[in-house]
Structures are given as C-alpha cells and as structure tokens.
Length: 388
Image (cartoon, rainbow, N blue to C red):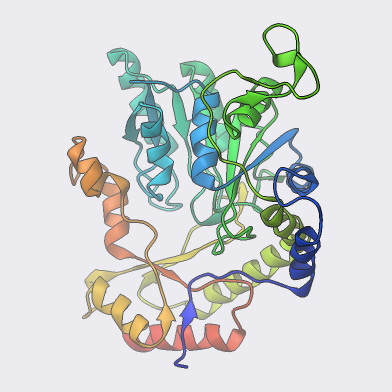
C-alpha cells in the first residue's frame, strides 16, 4: 500500500476494545450505565457539574441552543472559521445567523470586533440571543473577555469546544464553563478522543442540564418532580416539549470512558509533536500558529499559513504537491459565509475579510497521537522541498 499520512486519526488500544466488548456482552447496549460513567468521567476531568452525552457534537450544539431558548428570528453569532455545524445549529431553531470575524493571530473569534459589533447591534435592536465562540484547533477563545460582554448585552454563551477537550484556559480545563453557560465537545474519530460519532454538552446550571437531558430523548421525562400532575405509576413518563432522538449508545460511551483514561497521554503526545513542528519549521516562508498567553491548546490541528508573496507556487499547488507525496494535508476551514447555502441567505465574499484571507493561505498538517517522528520528519522534508 502506498504511503499516506492522514491529518488526524483515532488511536484504539486493547483496553478500548475490551471496554466495548464488555458492553456487547452485557444487558445494556443503549441508555445503560456506561452513559453515566462516561458523562461523569468528562465532568470530573473538566471540573463541571453536569455533562450530557449525545449522538454528535452537532446534536449537542442543537440542544444547547434549544436549552438557551433560541427561537425563530433570534440572532445567533459565531465564527466564520469553523465547520458549518457551528452556524447550522442556529438555523435548526429558526434563528438568524451572523458571524464575527477572526483574530489574525489565533484564528479564533476576535473579541474587539465582537465588542464593536455588539455596540452597533444595540443601536439597531439586533443583539444576539446566543454567541458561539469556537475554540479553533484546540486553543480556547479569550473567554474572560467574552463573559463580561455576555453579561452587559444579555446573550447566552455556548462554547464550541469540539476541538478542545484536554486544553486549558487560565489554568483550568476547557469545558469547566467558568465563563460560559454551556460547552460542547466532539468525539469524532479525528478529534482528541473518540466514541466513533458522539458529542457532549457541559454546564454548571441544573435547569439547563434538566432540559438538555429531556431534549436528547424526545422531550420525555420519567422524573416525577418535573411532571405535570401526579405520576400514574413506575411505568409512567411525560413528554414536556418537542425533543429528539439524540441519544448515545452504551457501546460508544464505553469507548469514550476508556479513551478518557488516555486523554492526558493523547494531549502530551500532541503537544510534543506540535513543539517539534515549531522547531523543525523555523525559517520556512510560512506563519506558524500563535498561542494566546492564557491558553494551552490540546492541538487538535496544526495549521500553517503560506507566505504566498514569497513563493513561486500557489496555495493549491503546495496543497496538491503534499497530497501527491502521500501527506494527508487538509484545510480547516472554508469560511461558512462563503458556502452556497449561506450565500443564498444574503452573505457575500468580503463580509469577513480576515477569515477569507486566512482561507487563502492555510494548510492543516498531519497531527495525531500515532503519528511517528519519522512520518513528521518526512512531512517537514517534503514541505521544505516544496517551499524552497
């Protein structure tokens, strides 16, 4: 088989396999004890009160928006440098979506631009109901700067931390919700830990937790304290709102709980590989990813930007040359507002220039737990040959 180094991939150990097999041999395949064990493992790691496991991070974003009572015509703001789910979750609720351009160094939502946009929106009576900061590549947004704006302007903060489990901000784990109402993780196979497909919403607020639990399972409750009127008996349940079948299986949760035990090793390895990239890529005509002084990235992605004015090759030519060498580079992300669907909603190229400039120059290099140093050396050698 020809060499191919993917930009990301899962790491599955015998411990992980044994955990899944144990569930397959048990009485529970879904809605069983493995769900609670996984939720507790993540909550304990992050130092947060509540965690709700669901079928995907997209599902997590959706029910988080619903728990925040985002409804028809309510504005949701997020970053244009993200996967479309960060914006789509608002549209699922009938909300309107807008974007806040990115910081030129961290590629996260630019808080200075957010502040100015809020001032204008207050004058126009178009303030957001929800803001979704995206922790791009594993690095937290500047949440301590966003939180007072949320208090001043009255919006709910949902951290899209899909890239960032294992990361830290101001010495605390991403996901602790110190500066937000809710935070969302993704467990897709290219993320830091995996459940196959899967996601989770974290919060410190009991009313949000109760609603999230209902929303992931058809809006149904079996808790007598939440029912209208008296329970008819042990079999009884009530549907209190319109929810969804967004449940995670015990099979997935068992894998997730096992992966959580490996999370520190995953992050340590990614940090080592990122440090090595910083060392090996010095002197090339590229911009290396900047790190905010308050943040410690979990390094879901390692993104470089090409200094195209110094190169003979185009962005696409560099990308395709590396792919031809068996290096699974990728591009994270095409700005959401440039997608045809969002163009049909009225967005236009030029609306968020920093995100668009970033897109013209960015390449995600392979970075994952099982990538070898020899593979990393090969990637760097091929990139150097291409750029010099």
